[in-house]
Image (cartoon, rainbow, N blue to C red; front, top):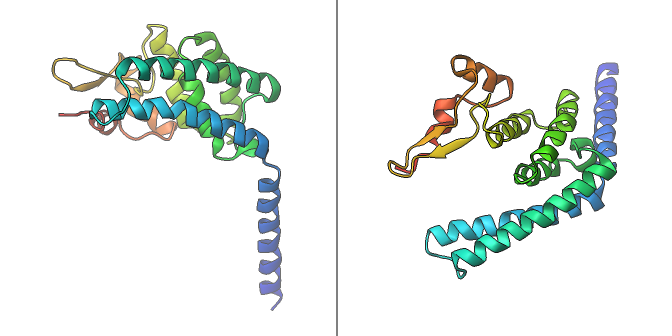
Length: 197
């Protein structure tokens, strides 16, 4: 009898703790990031429709709106970072991953992405952000700086063969081990998912 009472008490405490964590989430910031993420994805989705000849927009309109949305989101992301630091799970829940996606698309400001990497690493070390996102942003920054990537997350398509391949790797022999440490699957499987032929 005492055992079941203790278990019930522990479960009640865990539920209360979980509820308290959810209650601490910054709903206003979550809404801001949600809105930014919708803008981030809108023209990317429209471009996919265009590729399938299903878009009501021409390529020039899509590209100009895409660039504009990314530019506006970059300004907003910098404001969030300046006010809150990197928004991890304890502040915005899974919306943290959407914020990462927005930052991932700030390719015109590599210094900003590098600043994010430092902040993101601290959150990853506290299990407060996704380590695979850290790997993806690390590689993106390295490729944007014309350096070899570590985790093989950045992929290029050969325009003639349409075959996918990773940008050059810094540690090709140990890439799968490094990927596993960051919660990523084998490189061959990842690359295969990009092949269109």
